[in-house]
Amino acid sequence: MTKTVVVTGAGSGIGRAIATTLAERGWQVVVTDIDAAAADLVAAALPAGDGVRHEATVLDVTSASDAATVAYGVTDRLGLDAWVSNAGISFMHRFLDAPIAKFDQTMDVNLKGVFVCGQAAARAMVRSNTAGAIVNTASMAGKQGRVPFLADYVASKFGVVGLTQAMAYELGEHGITVNCVCPGYVETPMQSRELEWEAQLRGITTEGVRAMMLDDTPLRRLERPEDVARSVAFLLSDDARFITGEALAVNGGAYMD
Image (cartoon, rainbow, N blue to C red; front, side):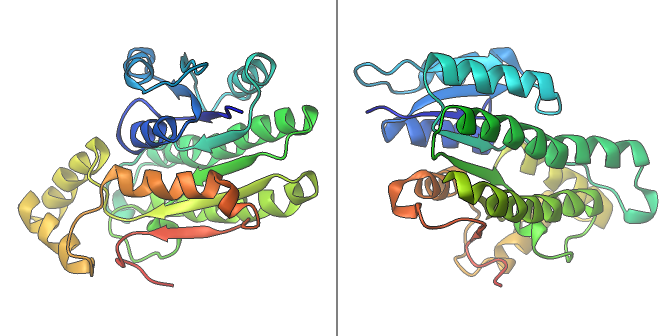
């Protein structure tokens, strides 16, 4: 029987890789993003087997009403078996110079968005008596504060790790598992922006920053979105049905705990 998953922030980067990997493994994917055109392009490119129809829809993850509309709509039309809260943003600035407005924006998307979407997904699963799975995208920055120029991002991702555990504890009685993945230095458009920002803040070249990332990573390469996607696929699989509340490090050894 085909299972259906909603992926947020799936218009590019890690989210697109998650949507693609899950589709390749037989999932029916609802691609959501704040950018409607990007979501449409990703959904149209997904491989689909017999009886599988991928969808795309706009979702502002900070909106409880938007999240509920998507969660209940998917449940009623297709059945909601899993939800991946992946949407996230970042800005880089020295802590002393960090604008409160940017802090608010980061927390709204990265933490409130995970709360809002997780709540909507869980309510829909409980209503339909579905022992589903929820995976949140955190970061290795959610396990250590030794991350320069990203204090607000670090705070948001520590929050995601804690929220994942709290959700897992309360939703266990409904058979719903909740886990998060903690990627490292992933080659995405967001990281490309961060490379430029960090280079400016350090007064070095982007290649110099990239070399620092490689030096931090024992496996000696930067992470690819597909590395994260395969970990998410595992956490949504039957093999992971007795794993919940976990913050899975997927970073090539860049941070070990």
